[in-house]
Image (cartoon, rainbow, N blue to C red; front, top):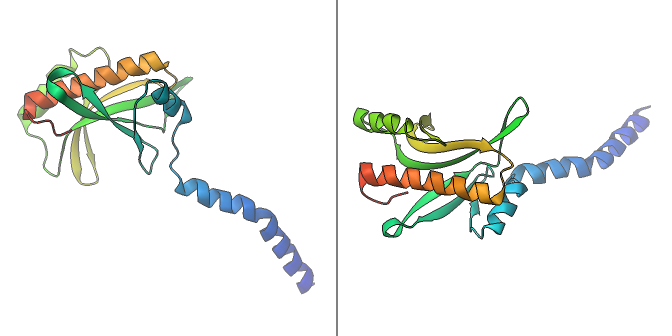
Length: 168
């Protein structure tokens, strides 16, 4: 009886081992959304992939040789039948809360935006101000390019206005 239990246990381990190893491999690899990667390749953008699958790249802003770091989340959210993706750019990161004038400036700027909005996020003991466009996950390459341009320009304009420097 004991021998048959041992044999059954060993058989189960052998049969399940490919599945278990695949889970280890897939959990350690970044889960990048191939749909975004394909569109970025079409647009000829170079990028990096973070551990969580978020895509990071430098967008050149044509004005005065400035650039802006943009992020595209591979993880999407759903609302009813809509799959939503975030395309964003950070302009402030600090362990100190942003001053009131800065928060007022980005809040007033929100009223002029047609796509995207300023957000204040507190994460990992850090405050972040970022411009975030929450858009359809399956945009065409041309629409994704337009979204990238809008987010990059909005973030760079505000960064220039608040900090003058080109840090992000």
